[in-house]
Length: 293
Image (cartoon, rainbow, N blue to C red; front, side):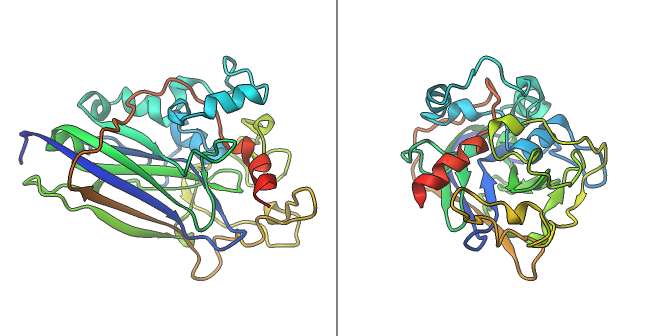
């Protein structure tokens, strides 16, 4: 396999394919590595990193989102007292893994940060992109992993348990273009699917408040039907049911399209390789929705 030092810039795009008033995706954690990092295994208990992504949408690189920490401070959040230990996030687990220490690169894919307040979530119909510069051997960046929270839910997420090959054995770029269907949404098995609005992370006060399940990662059984008191019935001020179409188990439901392409010339936007601060971003969703109406 080719191991010569190479430089390449990849464009990662994540499109939320959910219908209007459908599922929302948290900022998408992505990594390019040597293939040794195991994000999760179907049928096995979730790592702390997957738990925090699936329950609270917190991968651990939130400090890399321009303006986000400032927005937290403006809302009166004590950023020195995070409810999620930084060393338990997927970003921290990756950074300390052999893949991370062997030159692997990780980052977040999130939408236009010029919106106010900065919102690291991808709404239905939105496309978020990230340019990632790879510098090093092809071996260190040959594979791709990702994961993100599917909201609203107790602990639903999407991701790939087996790394996706982005470069072949000769170092030739392959790329990726795939759609994640609703029947592929996963249940982390870390929080009981009670859909109790006092537990689901609609704001920061709900982080870590769910009932522990102590289960294993499985395909998600689905949300409670509209009109039965689950998260699909959640009403924002004014009576708007923002998630009336978030039943991802509905026939033909599409959650996301993820594409990875190589751009002709490098774009100087290095990815962050360590998780310095872990704090969920979905708590500002309510304010963002109000402004968008």
